[in-house]
Image 1: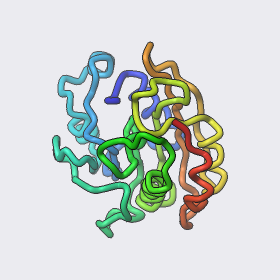
Image 2 (image 1 turned 90 degrees about the horizontal axis):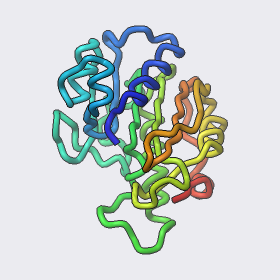
Image 3 (image 1 turned 45 degrees about the horizontal axis):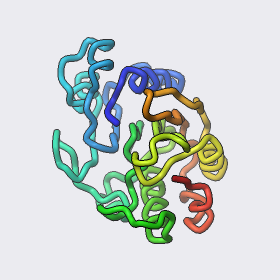
Image 4 (image 1 turned 30 degrees about the horizontal axis):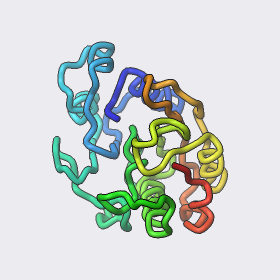
Length: 213
């Protein structure tokens, strides 16, 4: 996806609503080696296309996760349990700017959607980000809405998906809305705060029933 102006607007809207006015010394986890798109660079007067540099200039301790290892990204498989213990209960902010819809555990998508292997891999990635955020962590998601581009990502989402995830994990919803992102893809924009340190719920057998493509 990359970071467009509306994405970065939503980031700041969310963290400020959660009481974070500055990123100084905040532990920030970014899923994907994200790039700043022209609309964000123009609006926020920022020259580099590397989002890591943007967040570092605001004083955050920034970690990005991506297999491509570009831009300082850490190559971690988010479809498997977290291999780095210090990342557990570590982050103040977690961003998912059009990344998790691709987490299905395999490079080539299967011909038939909805296999149990892909569902449990995807559940594991949501389990991981839950465990990586400390109590008070702000999670910010910008992901494809059901009915948007069929070719973009393995999973699409709807508003009830996030309602259920937040209900089962005692997250406090900050914002949840549909967003007309561009003429090709509509998105769900959701942000919430982790309020309790407890295991991610539900199990993947229930979780997979909330997923769509």
